[in-house]
Image (cartoon, rainbow, N blue to C red; front, top):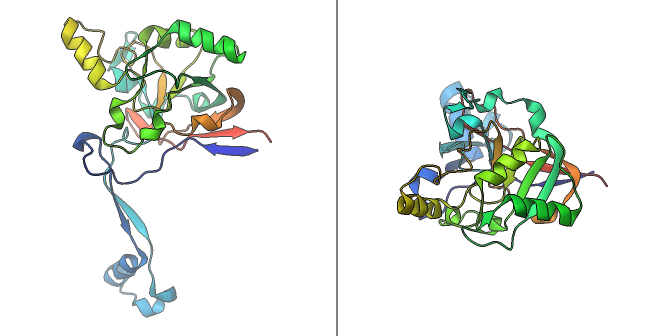
Length: 253
């Protein structure tokens, strides 16, 4: 088999990234570890191999949504279809290991809509019929902006109607290689303020559906449209609205 890594690296955010979406990470080297061993356990460096202790890393800031991650229904609303929304630790694990499908919408620009008709056309083009629990991933090409301070402002967005249609086909995990599943936040905000209506901002997230999203995927261009498994198990964050995930595609030789 061949494995394609669809997850972005976890690195400190570049200067200029808005604070509420930034990641802080400190790498502690072996010298730092040796000092800890001496301080905590009173074992001198001369008793350590090459005088080195353990290497560790410390997250100084990491929101569960700041890296490649899986959203739970709890992220969208506190209730879904009249019931308390599920948190990430409550989702069936079977959802996260299924046949994958990539639908290519890399030709669409910022704020463009991915509609039901778009999905149907692309499925016809690649000759695939969706099956329940397929993991459907939308390729936008926006992974090329990953790590840039304005990453969140790139890409098209999947409409609420298209999200409902996927759900009706039995899809429970949907993914995208952009910052979010909806249109960029600035586009949504401008339209919501202009129209002064609810149901515009975050429309696909708040579609009242108990489904999961994978956001901030990378390298979808390295996959064929179908014919492989996707594993996207999120970290088991008790009560969490999301879990960072190491998402991979597993292709046969």
